[in-house]
Length: 539
Ligand code: GLC
Image 1 (cartoon, rainbow, N blue to C red):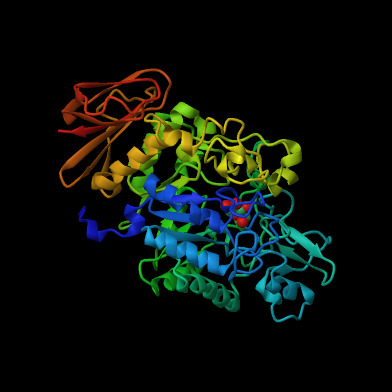
Image 2 (cartoon, protein in one colour):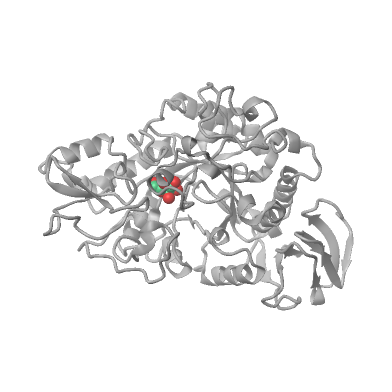
């Protein structure tokens, strides 16, 4: 594979950083983050060494699902600022060489969106068919057995017109009817609105859910469902997700992006690899990056993850660019899932795999899930299905900037509680601490930037040559470009381990997650400490 820098685009070489805007930086002291706050913190992203920021939704919204219920696709919620603030943010970001990715939420609008208000007003309204309306079943119940992701049926009965409308999420989030060409045209225009303002790309919300079965057939039961799993998983999503026609819609979105230079689209898709890969496009180009959530979903075991990386690499269609994610606003924080020590190993894994990494804000300092007292719960999922661990507030808490009151996030009590240990665990405390998580992230990102082997080089599993059977805690692979070779060896357990360099010969330690031993010679066998990851520059 050729590795000449000019052949790769920014979203291939670069690293994406996700900002949950309510929790990044408050500039007007209302306890909620905003656009001016993000602007004021851009230098953090530059110092960290990322290339693009993805901002979760900032559009006008009743906030039933914290912005994923959009009431106007072409404006900014006053809580976050206005269009002038947005333009200033984009130009400040661009001046620093940072790209800006917006969250596009096409599957559903808010029930307060003017389109839905019209649609629900009468059966004959011109926008009736912009949403998915169906007659009741013969017994008066919902038209199909489909379930909402947030619990309960996915249909809501509307007294005014005597029909049900579909909502795969909250009833305040009615699903748009993407089979309607007017919906397609209107939504594609909202993409152009932001592209014309200089946005570099979109993260597309629930891309695989955008089209539903034309015949509205019932979903079959899921024999693998167990209590504790998400409630909608009681049924297989045979007829409510990943329908063949969704690919025409994604291809249309891609065509809009291709009207502009070097814009990109990353799609939120929770599907197995064989289905996921179709979203790169089969008949026509689709998403540049269908999100790969492997590292979020799999148990933290070397053998399991090694096999998954192999399977993912093998499943990628020709020319498709890989990507990796450790966390997002819907998933438990990596530091809580695998522990503080392994979170450092996870960072090394994320930033040395082949493909575009996405970092979730706060993971660069090791923020953990923050316990939320019942009276502070905000997430509608937790409110609807309490106590089952589905709530997403714990991973959405304010960024911990410094040891001051409210962690430098705000001057008033934030909308979600701060971590109890923020006075120790914050950006200011870690910035100049040579062994901190932040220092590790900066070193990894700097190495990735300076060595094309990591961003665009080839990937080869080294599991066979070491002692890495299913019982081993070691994950090892080789990254190579332009004749420079790096061996990445990760110990996924909290006991020491060994790895035989075998035919790879010898090298020097380019980086350890302990941030010591740099430059040490490695020959024959590499001794790994508990929870240690090492990058060896091979001779
Ligand atoms: C996506 C978002 C999630 C949201 C849901 C409905 O999964 O990431 O936060 O609740 O879609 O829009």
